Amino acid sequence: MLRKRNLRCTDEEAVPFFRRKITRIKYLTVTTTRMASANTSWSEENFSCSICLDVFSSPVSTPCGHNFCRNCIMKFWDEQVQYKCPVCNDNFHTRPDLRVNILLSELASQFRTTVVRVKEQPFVESSEVPCDVCAGTQLKAVKSCLVCFVSYCQTHLEPHQRVTVLKKHRLVEPMDRLEDRMCKKHDRLLELFCKTEEVCVCQSCTEGDHRSHPVVPLKEEYEVKMAQLGKIEAEVQQMIQERQNNIQEIKDRVKRSKADTDRVIADGVQVLTALMRCIEKWQDDLNEMVKERLKSTEKQAEDLIIELEQEIEDLTNRSSEVKQLSHTKDHLHFLQAFRSLKDPPPTRDQTTVEVRPPSYIGTLRRSLHQLKETLNMKMKKLCDVELKRVQQYEVDVTVDPDTAHPMLILSEDGKQVQYGGELKKLRNNIKRFTYYACVLTRQSFSSGRFYFEVQVRDKTRWYLGVVRESINRKGWTTWTPETGYWILYYSKNDGLAFYNNSAVRVPLRAKLQKVGVFVDYDEGLVSFYDVEARVHLYSATGCTFREPLYPFFSTWFTSDVKNSARLIISLVNQTD
Image (cartoon, rainbow, N blue to C red; front, side, top):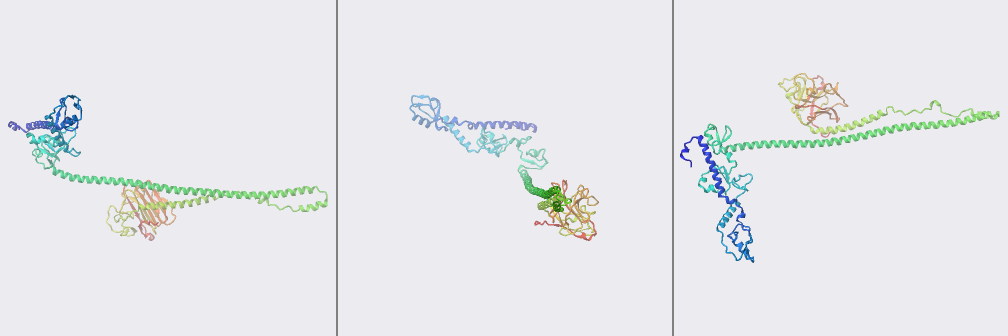
């Protein structure tokens, strides 16, 4: 106890004094505890019989000074001819008179009790507080002393339950890092939480620096923070789930991309293989045709040569007859023979003797035309496969009335656009087109792929495509990719074209009925298709999209009655 004079010291003097007292008490406590429990650190070998290897039972000492269980040594000597020590082999002439070693018996009994008690205590788990006094394997602490700043197992807690000065110490449930739980300024347990400064404080702190601050018990603030922690954990788990979903989506995309790549490679190999076969067949046919013509010319030449050689032979014979007759002196014979030579043998008119080389004019051109037709068929087949593939990315879009020019008429379902010719009084807003007769959809796209189809049947002029969100909707502008427009344009007078820095003319084989628009945002691709003919019209590649894209429709301003037909957003016909 503190002397009376010490109680009169100031707070600044009292704090160091109490700290020295507490440190001294801690030292005495630990020392006393370790002394009281020193027997727990003795080795079991000190209390074991060397014969049965167990803790002594009625230990006795031999004349040589070694100790054994009474029954063990007696039984050992009963089986021996000579009486000797099992440890040092010292021989005894007569059987020694053994008496129980009282001191060793008591120590062995205490050791046996301590060992049993220690073995009954649980060892510390990873989430539990260990005993600070245990040497070697630490046992689970059952109490912590706020005076000693030490945690004790059941064995080492015994002095606090027996020694008078230790009984006055404040014991609490086991706590780890006890010194961190004490106020550094007041050496008191941190039991409260200051909401103003969000720090843990002791009761003395609330009477000093934190006097005007709201404080609550640690348990109450713990429950509040645990509730917040639960919310944070839920948010973290949601973020983790979102990222796991993103990872899975990326893996699925890669898997789909690999499947698409395999299909494209297979289709390419199939088409190119068929094309090479067509070219090889075309080359073989061309070679065969040319060779046949050459063979025909050679046959004609051979027949003509044979004919001419026969005439030469006939003429040679006639020449011989003429020579022979020229030597005849017999007038009668001469005149009779000359009569047969008067008519020459029939021969070919030499002006008709001609072998014309085969003509190949137009042959190669006709073969190339056939090859072109074959290629067109292959391209159409390939385009049909491509169109079916992009149609899988169909999206449901509807036009947005808030963007429509006042002269446009929209259907209630948002699927049809028609030029009305009359300027309606509509509330103006930043989204509405006021210069061009245009309209956008409600839906926008900032990633991935999408596809939609528009019926243009009976329209004499129209504009279709996608546009950037930030395009100019109030004044004149050029419709090019640089200004945010990727537009396909049609006019009965000008034909079909893609709006670029200069119009890119797109050939048409037949009148368009329905146009398909496909966009791959990530790849920077905008493609247009003739859905009915199943052919590709035009693709803008290498596009840069940095904003949301909106499907775009325009009927233009026209007084042409024939252009009063509607632009209709159509569903994809999967049977096409």
